[in-house]
Image (cartoon, rainbow, N blue to C red):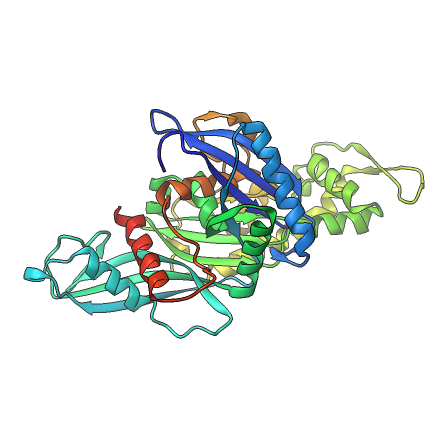
Length: 410
């Protein structure tokens, strides 16, 4: 990514689509110069269910970002989530073939290729191959083996896959909206780039992104990603509970959740009465805020318990020295971090995207963590190609491997 080059991150969520436009200033700092938002009307749990509505929502969000930034957008880095995402760890082993047995970039590409040489169902495609560490002969824990001498090279990687149909539907929607897809990125991975610090990744940290239709988890240790998971539950379920419990519309329930939602009843100081609009012309009613908390807390508790259950499946759960970082719209519900900390027994805080200039105050919110993270991803992958090309072949595989090597050693 060159200085002053315009990049657009497109967060395609279940409840909203956010387009964030950024560029590097003369000092190499990220400035946000445009923001566009539009309600997401064609997705369910991160998956496209209505092409036409999704295309229109994408177009509206990007056009708003173009208007605020004063720049024409031609291509975007798009986020992807949904409970179709699957991930696992894999290992590859090769014999070093370079001159004097010195490991070269070609050897790294070969060992990564060996690590991802696995049988996948026809309906799945690799989204990311993220190296964790390398072993040269019997020396493990190596981050960059290029230039080292050895006979045997091993690589441990984290592989993230997506349903081909779901990913291509997102690409098709962006194409039909009139924009090019530069790359597709797993949303919790993108969010981690904007809210996590390097020392947190080294010490051990988990990011939990509570979106509208999904809750996305990514766990890091020793500087590398170790575990990812997407759960088919999110803030929309809290809104639905409120709409049913308060007998009001979903739009009104969403507004009440944002303004008066409380994740822990024990945090309520005194009580206050909230006016709830009626439906179908019925008069509004007054309810206690404690009633809202009694509806919100059980669902938020369920989300955190499901997240904890998934995190405990990882062998790095006991090594999360930096605790948990929450992002996503529902992380803004009052008391969410306190509830998560009570359930998980480790420190929890709400993550804020790191930006240096431009529309700083606008995007310094966990709801923009993914959009800003997609721009940070573009800083490392300016020339990468989409992982779901319309045609398959050796050239695309080779390009993907080069992108992986460039990401970590470029």
